[in-house]
Image (cartoon, rainbow, N blue to C red; front, side):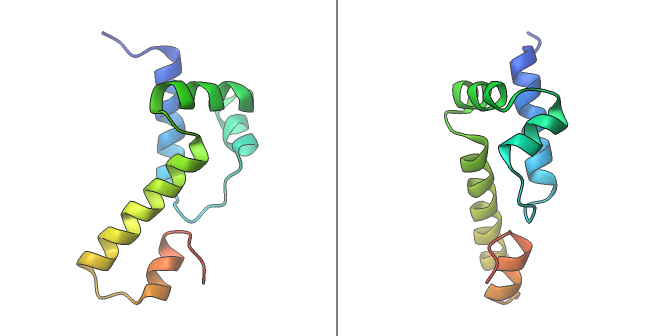
Amino acid sequence: ETPSDAERLVRRAEGLLTADLTANVSIHALAAELGVAPSTLRGHFARLRGRSPKAHLLELRLRRAVELIRTSSLSLDEIANLTGYYS
């Protein structure tokens, strides 16, 4: 089964969010990049992922921060900067 247009849109949004965890991306900027209305992106994301794009980005940042805490010798400040949690 091929992914629906909505699924492809959400996957593209996820890719953009994952590409730079430090970016402060607004739903409006993300939607513009994808060529859709913010309400369309928000609705598809919520329906297919059960959360907003912003919540998804926060989860990505948190998971990456936890991974770096567990596997690197970076300071917490460095990890915060790498994951968008500025000190």
